[in-house]
Image 1 (cartoon, rainbow, N blue to C red):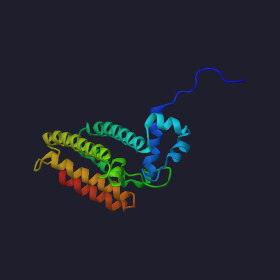
Image 2 (image 1 turned 30 degrees about the vertical axis):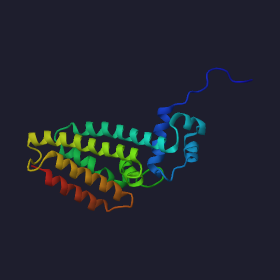
Image 3 (image 1 turned 45 degrees about the vertical axis):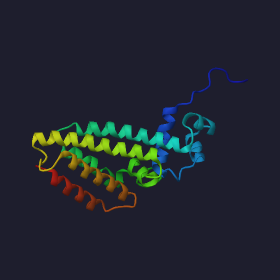
Length: 199
């Protein structure tokens, strides 16, 4: 007897979340449409209909990644004192024993990975990562400005410059972590940078 009732609807949001994990683990170039079809257990036509081609699908996943990261970043920095929260953010790529993907490799930061893989050849990817980096420095600078006013962070240089330094640290660590790094040395470097911020 044929099944009756409404067919199961395509869950675009859930599919995008699962695709994000796959892209994040493997990278853009190493993930094929067939990989996505197999991993997501959806029809190829459904993917094309919902997201367009692989590039469009990937960029949507990158946008979702940043939206989630920005929410977490904002919440984490809305605390006092600030420096312990900053340390948690900066040490994230260095805690490799806690940050291993299903494939057994560090995933790094998807924004940083996109920068390395698609920028500057892809103008839309460039716009996404540039905006993400600007948002990071804006959010961190605002938190540093509050910490300067509280006397926790040195005011010998601007919060914007301090935030830019932290962006370079977190992205550098994220990239290096994909090739393996000395965890103790990385943590020591982070603590040195934070000591430089301390009032």
